[in-house]
Amino acid sequence: MIEDVIIIGSGPAAHTAGIYLGRAKRNPLMFEGFMAGGIAAGGQLTTTDSIENFPGFANGISGGDLMEQMREQSLNNSARILTETVSSVDLSKKPFTLTLESGESAEAKSIIVATGATAKVLDIPGSKEFWQKGISACAVCDGALPIFRNKVIAVVGGGDTAMEEAEFLSKFASEVVLIHRRDKFRASHVLQERIKSNPKIKIMWNSIPVELKGSKFLESAVLQDTVNGEQKSLEVSGLFYAIGHKPNTDFLGGQLKLNEQGFIITEPGSTKTNVEGVFAAGDVQNPHRRQAVIAAGSGCLAALECEEWLSLNSERAW
Image (cartoon, rainbow, N blue to C red):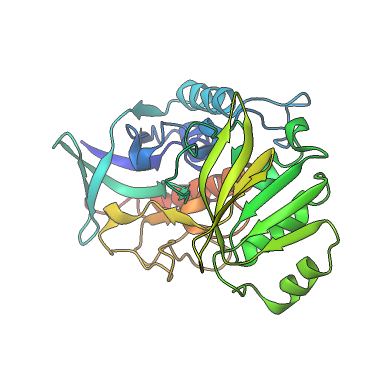
């Protein structure tokens, strides 16, 4: 059986696409993955305890609960969901062929890639233990939570994202410590000047965290000087990684155009990729502003564009 559309992914973009295509009677098939990219089905949001900025939830909602509701809504709108990971795709001919990690395959007239991007973190003692217990990779998502208010917060990184995260966190923290492994930033000059002029932001040059400590929640970070190797302890109630994201695009085998960071390139204002009939939505094609509501919106656009493409190609010999 050749599917009208297969959605690869399980986050807000994937489920919004599934809801819209289900309502369009396309009976979409979604491969949500089994620990794909090291993350459970539902994507990055499943690692977030509390979301206070997703519309419709006045009192907030946990990331896991939000994704469970999205999944249920997809199913209620005729999407079919399989907990299997797509290991490779063949986009060289139509219908497209997808190979699963189980060895089985599936064929589709169109594909929506919504596999997201995984935040890069340091593999150091305490990093996993205190994840979402003082450690995060999204200041906009978590920075306003009570556990970070009027506390000393650290940000690890030296690019534009790190500058933006530090500035945002300075609105809530008593002090923000920006930890950078070199003696100069790679961020834009404008952002650097804003950070250096912010009285609530302290910069620690030539430093890297090598261990994170605490009891139930993060309490301190052990920093190592990258020049002389000396170590010292820094009391912090929060630490935000801002060292980049890795888009989950390895399975594509270079068949879609990617930017230097590996994110899928789409047509401006569209989710269309360089391969006709293949669309990309969510964080996998958005290197900036990684927010659930933005991903959901791009999933909606992908569904609408995919439905239009399928309608225009309804007479095609598959």
